Amino acid sequence: MIPGTTEQAFEDAIECALLQGGPDARPNPKARVREPCPAYGPSSKPGGYNRRSTSEFDRSRCLFPRDATDFIIVSLPKNWKRLQ
Image 1 (cartoon, rainbow, N blue to C red):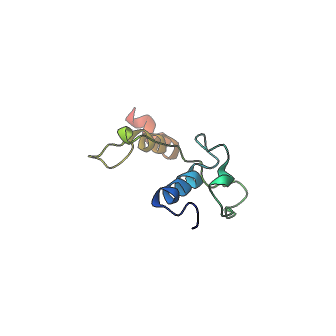
Image 2 (cartoon, one colour):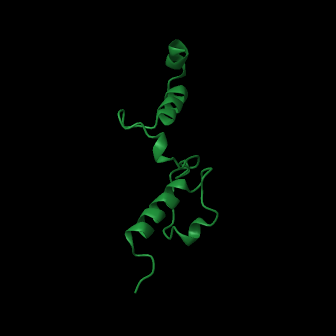
């Protein structure tokens, strides 16, 4: 039997890969992620996602409000100043 071939192990591997390089990264990602990360360029690093609680998800809008707001602040600073 091959260890770690359950759906939960698959979900854990995906989460570990997404969190790699970010503030919620697992202490030993090599134990979970077994494939090398592709090169995305000199300044781009894959992963770096933050773990979120399901309670933070706004079901009526189908998004995480804090993430949406942060994206607008960073990508459209002039528009954000107008909205404020």
